[in-house]
Every structure is written in structure tokens, then in C-alpha cells.
Image (cartoon, rainbow, N blue to C red; front, side, top):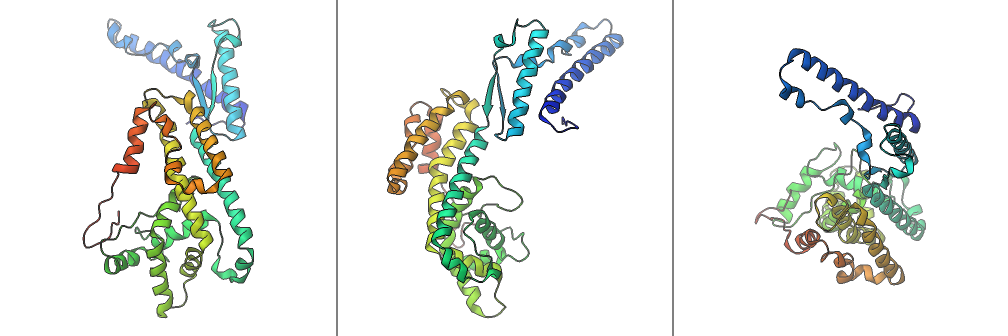
Length: 345
């Protein structure tokens, strides 16, 4: 691990460059010791890289990728400047303009930023629509329209791992086996312990698909009258029976399948896709942008299965493995359901 004491962009870049200089010194010492121990064995010495081989000037024509925060992008800029200066110093090129390198924002971070802003906009709209209703709900129940908070509560209450002390995951699993044997129960998304922004779309899908079972379970427990009202269960019941909240879950579920999963695959598999690469990712973005403009003009298109699930269809002929992936998730992927108990894995 390379850590800069000052934790500033320039010093971080300098620390990275210094680490390569240290690597050269270590390789030089290693070769000297090996030659001293085995003076007549050139084969062993040939296995140790030459010190000058440990150089960042090998990054010529390469991409340097960081996340999208200002600090990381500044480190990237400083690194490229330092590498270009080193290339001139080593005589690889006459000036820094002749040594080409590429800067690239991480597509996983970009995707998460899109989702974050989309979810924020959605929540503001729903919060405005429900402003009066939210005021009528006692603050003790902590009811909010924030999707990440709702999904965290669902994880606490319904996760079958039963990691949250006040949750009822194991009780819910037993209730499902008795009340709905053979039902398809989607795995609850892990929302506790840190998540990405697009975990909201990933968690919305099982929350939406399991909602009917969750509401029925909560209704029975809250109406049983055997214990004091559970704040977590009451809060979840109020939110999962709200038409507006359910609509948000539905929209985010569609976004996850139609947009997030394809973009994840295309960006994460660039190294393994024939006819595709990181330099072609802007093409996918252009396709998405045009599709979103149509959705803005006519919101019903998001609910049109052929349109929503076919946003990136034009890329399937260009990238065969992408076509195989889309066929797999839409037509072939299955979940096994036992005859006497729900799918709990």
C-alpha cells in the first residue's frame, strides 16, 4: 500500500513515482546478491527483471482510471505529468506532447453518480407529493421516502441471515414456509455495512417482488396484540402500503434491469468482449441518453417492456457476448423453488 503522509494530490503522485524508484533499487540489489551467490549461473540471474524494467514510462498509450472525485482526478493529472516528464528525462521522447496517455473516469463510479442523482430527484418529487401525509405520521416511526433508508429497514427486518437483533428474518422464513409453501421469495439485498449508490436499484427489485408477503407478515404481527408495537415493523408497514413508495420501487426495479445491469456488464467486461472496449463505452452512453430523452417526453415508455428492455439492443449484434448475457438474464436465468418451502437462497 502506498500512502502519502500529506494526503495531497501532488504528494500522492510523488509517492507513487518514488515507489517505482524504490522498486528499481530493490531489483538492483537482488541481482547483485544473486550474482554474488551464483556467479556462474546466468539462468537464475535472467529470471530477475532488470531495474530499468520497473518504470512507469511503460504506460505510454495506456489509460489511467480513477473515480470521479476532484482529489482522485487531480492525482491522475499529476501522475500523467510526472510520467511524461520522466519519459523526456529518460530520452524516450523529445517533449511531453509526444508521449501520449489517456485519462478515464471509472464507469462504475459514473453509473453510481447517475443513479444517485436520479434517486434524489425521485425522492424530492415524492416527498413533495406526500408532505402533508408525512406530517400526520408520528416522528417516532421514522417514516421517510428515502429509498436507502427503506431498504436498510427491509434488510434489518426480513433478511434471512437474521443479523439484526430486532429483526425477524428467521421468523419470516418460518412464516413463509407455513403460509406460502412453494412461493418464490427473492433474496433481500444487503444494505447494511456500506453500499454503492446503485444498491438502491438492486435492492428495490426484491423489495418490490416480496412486498405482498412482507405486508401480510407485518399486518399479522402488528395486529396480533401479543407485544408492544414494533417501531421497525410499523414504519415498514406504513411505507410498503404507500402507493407512491411502491411506485418508486417499481421504477427503480425497471431501471436496475433495463439500465444498471447492461451498463455494469459492458463496463466490467471490457477486457473480455470481442468488438468492444473501454473507448467504446461512450457509445452505450449515447444510446442511453437518446432513450432517456424519449422517456422524458413520454413517461409510459419506461413501462413498455419492449422499449425498456431493448434500450441497448442495437449493441447485441456488435457484441455477441452481450447478446448472450441479455438473453440469459431475460430468458434463461431461473430460480429453483422447492415444492414444500419457498426459495430462500
